[in-house]
Image (tube, rainbow, N blue to C red; front, side, top):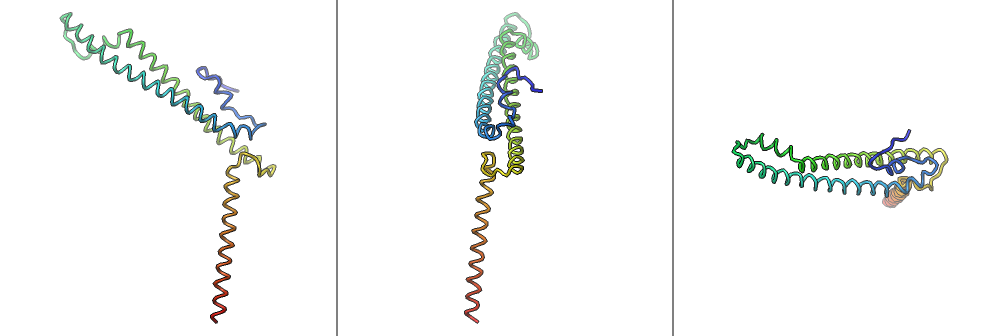
Length: 176
């Protein structure tokens, strides 16, 4: 059952794995992860801007309501001024904006996590498929290419070891 994301409905398609096109999924994975990471960073920046705007507004409203209480002849205690600030409609509006921005950041963080899980699933599916069908040339195993290079390096290293041993043994025979 596919869960619908109400904030980012397009994420459902991007986080699901099409097992009939593993190579295509593998090729798209890094681009999709990059896209969702940039979206997350953008929303995080927006959330931080709203948080800063809220902090500045709170300071301005604090000053305003403190002066109003003094003009009214009331004692401007911190709790009374805080109550006035939190009751201000402008402050409430910015607070709601911040809550909405935090929700978007959290949703995008979940999508990023889902993309990481998709990558792990793709690695497992591709490796299983490649072992079952003996497909060393598929796109999925960048790891296979790396392992092939390592095997070649090991073979060359072993060959050099054999040659150096043979050379050393040849020198020993000559000295005897």
